[in-house]
Amino acid sequence: MAEINRIIFMGTPAFAVPTLQVLIDHGENIVTVITQPDRPKGRGRKLTPPPVKILAESVNIPVLQPTKIKTDSFLETLQKLAPDLIIVTAYGRILPGYILNLPPLGTINVHGSLLPKYRGAAPIQWAVIRGENETGVTIMQMDEGMDTGDMLLTATLKISPKDTAGSLAEKMATQGGITLCRALDLLRQNQLSPQKQDDSLATPAPPLSKKDGVIDWKKSASEISCLIRGLDPWPSAYTMYQNKWLRFFRPQVISGDSTESPGTLCRADKNGLLINCGRNFLLVEELQIEGAKRMSADAFLRGRPMETGLIFG
Image (cartoon, rainbow, N blue to C red):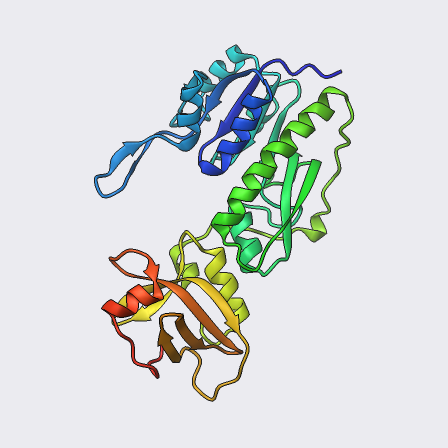
């Protein structure tokens, strides 16, 4: 039987919160939570704690927020905490080998894809952008590579045609916590069988930036729909309109042919904007113009009527 009496949890965003909550509910002894420093947010740039910190402090778990992790003092702190296991979920920094290997049971990670597919910082977003029908979570033993460690346990999750990166992340975060606790139970019983990843099947999931959101209307409506959903809520997919960025949300693919150029607005009413694409049409139900709030197409058009025939981009 593997002894897991002292756990350090490392995580930062909302995606990591359900995992930490499940560990708390599971009765695990989390001696410390390590998360990123508070960051300025909003128009007032007020310092705001990470979601993981808020949960940890609400149940009186000690929190550390190091600005640097590759220091002798931080390593000494970890050594004094004497963890049996470190658990990482979206911490946001690459951990050196001497931290990964510090606990007797090493460090395990909750990764948001079915490895070896989508190794990297944005696996959930890229799964949606690439039009995958399913994804999942992988509990993996961390090594110094980018999501290359041995797989311990996986769970599959369907991607619905209406899923966005945001909605899918919520489902996967919950599934990740459940799968992690199952993995811990199996680890205690010495019933986990680590499996090497097949590197030949690996696909990248690099970080996203705003430039990834530019819509190419020559692509099919299906491809553009996947891009819009995969970049919702951030950085979002957009096109140019009246010298401003116009962001699109809640897309639907509508079958049909048109002689109009890709990017042409074919209809604009309370149901949305119908736009011709390289193949088929895209119906967009929600919009956000630069400097304004996200709103329904109906509300948007009441303030900014659009003429059919205009070409986006």
